[in-house]
Amino acid sequence: MTDTGDLDALSSRELHDLAVRRARHHLDVKFLWELLRALPAGEIAAGHPEHAQADALKLSALIGDAIDSDDSDIEEALRPLYLDYLNKHKADLASLPQR
Image (cartoon, rainbow, N blue to C red; front, side, top):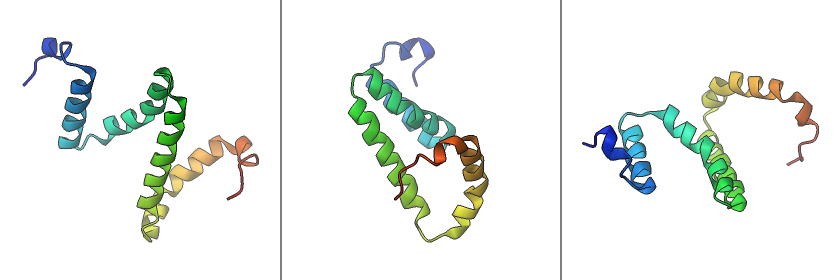
């Protein structure tokens, strides 16, 4: 494989591919989640704020598709996460657009 010194010689795309391949192989969901969280900021830093918004919409749709699989057990399992998040952001809830 590649030792640490060789990593600096790789292109950013090669680093991305290698990191994602490693994360998939080891089911490293934490790294993949960190990458997803960093993506919109990377888009903005690269001068593509419209891509950041599109990424957020795609991620939201992906999560919605996973949960809308008529499996209420998933919703119940995630309930504490929703409650914690919403309790932290109560002040913003009244200003949210209605569906």
